[in-house]
Length: 249
Picture 1 (cartoon, rainbow, N blue to C red):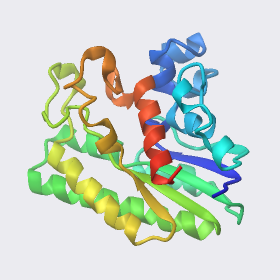
Picture 2 (picture 1 turned 180 degrees about the vertical axis):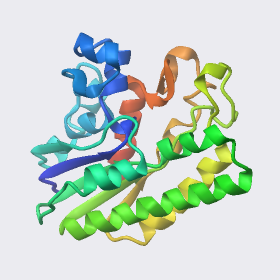
Picture 3 (picture 1 turned 90 degrees about the vertical axis):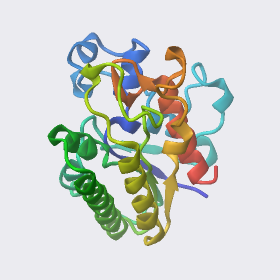
Picture 4 (picture 1 turned 60 degrees about the vertical axis):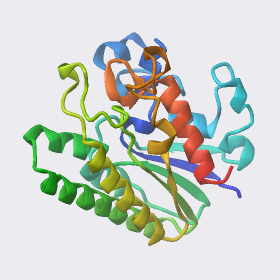
């Protein structure tokens, strides 16, 4: 299995911002603004690690990256923190010209939309509809990507539950979490979406991160302490590992 290019699409689950902030790396402006565009970021997020492992941080993953295992020579980042499904479709995918170069794409999408939906405190039935619709939107993005890239392998990503099934955050400042049952609806629908598309896999990030959220000791949690839906350094590595497993690498 060889890929010339890695294309990173979606929200901040695969990005460098939160992991670099947790590690206290990157430009001061980035830390002050919490904006990836404010300055340089070290390549410590999931997509960056998938492309080229940081051996100082993760020696156990030496040689387990696309650059080594799949001959990948290009990382094209389009993902950014806070990206909704609409942002991914309009601002990321539609900006791509596409080609027939062997490409693997990672997609993390839907989580921001479900989190936003919680602000209106919808009913359980309404949330189920929103989750189904979000998964179908991911399917539309997958279809467009396959149309634009003739040699594409796509990895979709299930959404994790930082509460580990608790369904609430101890600190109300963290907001209202997406209910575990809503995440289950989305993730189940996402697997159906993947099954209906060629060369499309599912990275089981929900399972990989389960038990490493609120139920884990503070220093062993996957998310950044200041934001329960953004991955810290450990979370980034675990997401990277789930992508590798989805690709059979």
